[in-house]
Image 1 (cartoon, one colour):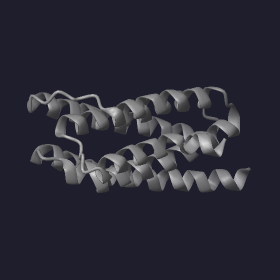
Image 2: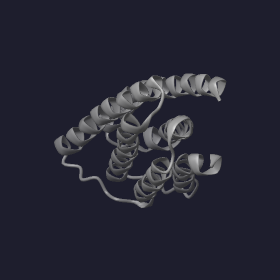
Image 3: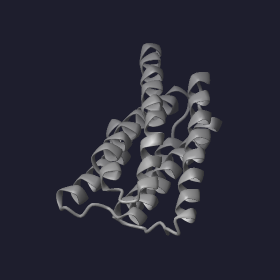
Length: 176
């Protein structure tokens, strides 16, 4: 179970690390697709958690993820439109989408405290992987100054999400 929870974060980190290692940094259109896919994965998981979470803190966190990541996606899509930049599907964005589908399937099979734990464990791993990807690949690779500025601007929210998820993770561990 624990392995399944961390799969999506590992997919993101390994896909981006491989591209970086091969000196094949993603292009701005590819970065846009990665950003949209990463946010959509968290929106979809958050919507499920809003309905299925057992603990009020987990439900509130899920609602915040839906709101915040929807806002980031709107900003990213709006900027891409303004720049006439069409997000370009790539192995990382496709891996994120596939991992999101797998995560939802896993979460749908769980109930109660087991659901809460799996959802929050995934959120911790996923936000850490996204931050690593932003710092090591996405921000350094962005060529367009406005795209880079958007990534830099939203980064603190991802840090806050990670800290919040870790707090909930600790409180859930005390209840198990």
